[in-house]
Image (cartoon, rainbow, N blue to C red; front, side):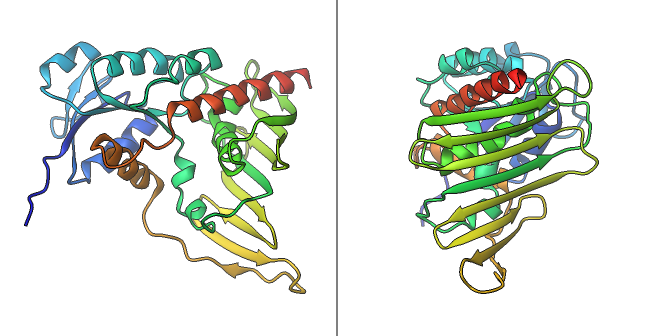
Length: 301
């Protein structure tokens, strides 16, 4: 019986909210070893991976295979570049970068993947294989919080659904875009709505707010002859066929697991050379470019 290959060795750079979520899942795996956490403020106790204050410590950690970048958005591009130059495969938290120009500079990096987690949400994975959706309605709401404020609500929250719209729409170019936005706390936009039509007819209407009383992540995906109501928070999905009188909803069984584990499965398989890298840099850059266009339109009102 063949022996299992040794676990891939990796680090997390940045240990805020998302860094901790990645760390928790990586520590549960048998095929990966989280060697160190790199963060200027020590997030670790005496137990667990080694803590390092900066990238210079990479030279002391021995051979490494991958890195997860979960630092603030403004640091994504320089950190990704430094890690790629060291020969590591890199998984970068969304958004890939805060600007389209920075993202475009990373497009040629074939060992970089973007952490667009919602593609791996069990509720999304319940959609029929090969379906060609015609319409997406997304509502993404969050209460006020301290993290994510280095960017506006479009790059903070709506970026998830902009990526889903482009992904479900087959990556077609944008034909029409309208948006509105509001700054509640002064400065960056805190509420935004966008209406986007892609070439070929796929349409998305997206709402994002980070000043809501309660959190919500709800999608409606319309196919020919049916639509799906997806609750990404509670991980519930219902299928509603058209033309059946009272539009009865039929629960859809979701695959087991969670989105971070599913993303790690795909990313680590790519690091081992078993599959393509999920969410390549070009697709992450495409979402950032669309977010930039939405922000411009929203500020114009």
